Image: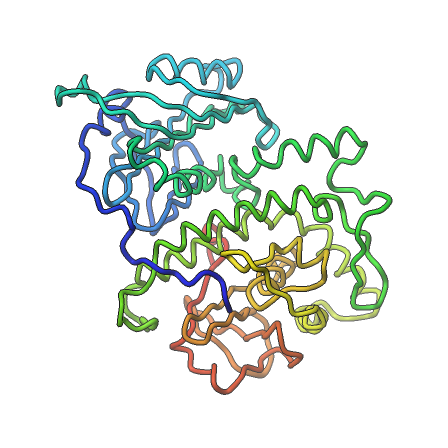
Length: 434
């Protein structure tokens, strides 16, 4: 496994706290909500966010305004919820926030989960109302969503002098938002915005992004039949947009690592920051790609069922099929191919094929986790199915291991990687209870 090694247990931004950032929170108020680990779910307004590791709730006294900050308190992520009838369009919400903050910059309209939305890059000043001297200038990104039941203003920003350092993590925080758990496995607002021009081109060409079109890539199924990949998988533009997220999240991940000389194992003790960051990295990539692979999962089920393969044997058969993929790595920082790219090329390595396998199993109703290891530089998948072989204990279950890059049956693992202490389990959708 070669995904960017988590490499900084302490964020690189070691600056003194800046209390004047809090004036924006004081100005609008804060909200109470449920919080566990890095995944925050607001029971009153339904939305879910997977905040960057090390960030914490800044204040949460009211349910319509929640704010998070990084350990150095140089950056803020705020979510403001409004009644759905308060604003006619997302532009109205944008104007409301822009006027109150005196923000200036660029904005652009797009559609997010069918709703009108605005993506903005704004700079503004704050601080003088708090009586702490001259104002400070901040810069960041905002997304305004005009929903049915609720409207949302999502705001991420950092002190201007440190904006470049925080750029990727601001976008990552913003992209972790989902308006409710039902949409948790669809791309976030930033990814949606970046992909919007490509999707518009597909629509203009008469393709809806789901149906296959002439000239699309084909995928060989286990039976040897060819499946015509939908443009949402085959489109080079959409795959490039997916890779933008992967590389951004790899740069975020690069700020975390075990302290020098520390073991990459933690056993039954508290999960260290580097491991939590690694888990979030794969959750972000998984979420961005999950919905796109639905049609392939359906095609696999039909193909295997037509051969008389019982449902309970499908995970093993899909594993054997993916093991036939060509071993391929990228030359990027992440060194991780998106699942869509894996299917178009029918190629990948341990973690890219592992993500692909887990997504396909989830679409077919099987539970699976990703297993990654710094010590072994490798990735596997754990599947919750009956069968003989090696199992990995994680969150009260024993997961049958699946090796993606060697043609061995499900349940087999290399002897020199069999020590469970060297592995980190990753639940790819933390909002689903087991």
